Image (tube, rainbow, N blue to C red; front, side, top):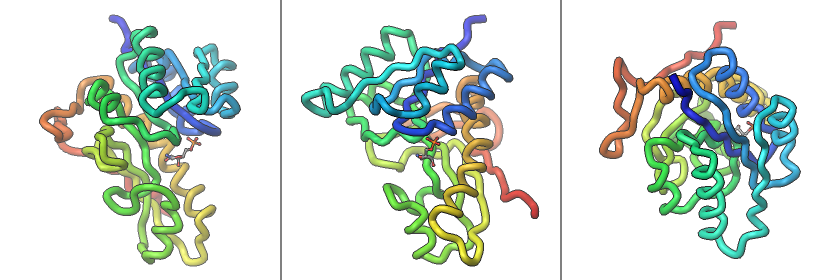
Length: 213
Ligand code: GRF
């Protein structure tokens, strides 16, 4: 059986990338064939290279337009026969053309319980709203930011005295559990994008509850 070839797109430290690499290696649901960063200084690139995974920097600043950057990313993915693209802290918005080309094969993780708090300053938004729970969402990517059909969510409590940093750290741990489960589900064909909706072979989206204290 040939394994699905997965690319992970990052911009920074790549802790979710690390979780995906570990789980794919342990569980064999796919091969992480490429880690691509739009920032040449992303710490995650080094980690990938150390794990014998091709680490490619494509600096967005070296491209004349958003379209040119998207085209370069697309070419890099096609050249390596990538099947599935996982965004993991990738801080560039991909254009509608790119998203359409990879539709159903392009997923993202966002550190809130979408549709609450899309975009940036996510934890500040959550604290300002006074929610008692926040979490993370893995979803198919659609042209609208942080709005695609949900594959899975993990919840964490918001505690008295939380700062954006403490809340982010708690959510990050939940992200590391959620993303591998969702990526595995996609690779095994147990969820697909159909007519703009996530269709599940059995049941519905993954729901990881808060850890009991
Ligand atoms: C994560 O919180 C992810 O949800 C968001 O960016 C952060 C990336 O962290 N999109 P890391 O690079 O995976 O450590």
